Length: 423
Image (cartoon, rainbow, N blue to C red; front, side):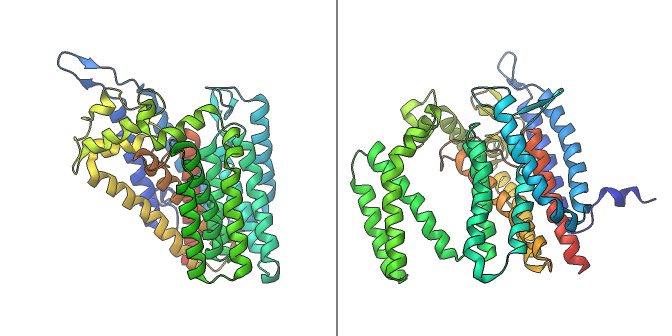
């Protein structure tokens, strides 16, 4: 019996090798994070237990099992169970808000014996499957708008439950995946860009009112938008609707601002001015940029990162693990990591275009959208290009739930590629 063949899933070997590479890199960085650094007279406590490394080893093995199952499970069965699986995860999300333990003011986990699971992570797989099921079975062009709105409703349900935990970063993952899927479904990219302009309007409105204390930044943005609408020649009705949406979003930002938690408000304000609270909410962003800047081109070398070793960098084993990579492996190491992610993303898009089954195409695009959003957002946060929010680097950051789900999603991509090759 060929046992080695059983351990290597059928399909795209490049995607599988990328998963292996990310898994081993995760273990290498977590080993470094949990190693003491030698000071002038003694070894300094790294502040992160070595148990973090060994638990990640166990979760990597579990993730590998999840990948193998997802890579071999028939796609038609996934299509059949998509709706009940989605409803089950909604029930888990609701249950978490009722019986989940409060940790640091948030209810995000369910305790099952000695294990803690994060239903918001588990919900990502059924969500992609149910969206693929909906968009596959309703490709009639005359109902495209109705189907798109129905898919938005399926997206908002888990988003609202996750926002109640609260977990803004994870909730936005669902919205990002939805954008990727409906674009592939046929919603014009110009329409999605127009809808995104409303979010940009909100940012400028917020900056004008809260940071600059001057209306001109938002006013200038609206003038630029008017010019862009004129050049785009969208038509009078479409242009008026888009302009009204931008104005209403800008006007409504104070009401949304009041709904945010205090720590969320502080994170956003600190993004615009990190020195506002350099030893509080701005501390993570400042130390992360210092760590990445210290690495330079070649890094400080493996196990030699001082920002990590002296415990200056918070959350260095989870959300800010990219900063450790930037410090110890330098720009070249960070670029290598991004290239490995690019292999998964590029191959996923290729197999989405080649797959004959519509369900397989949408599954692949959902997985690709997940990885694009997670990687881009996490890197943007650690480099100071976005406000700090809790979003792990998939397959690299410490955390069992995200590692398992990311591995299953890679398995789904391999599954789609295997069907493509067989066709």
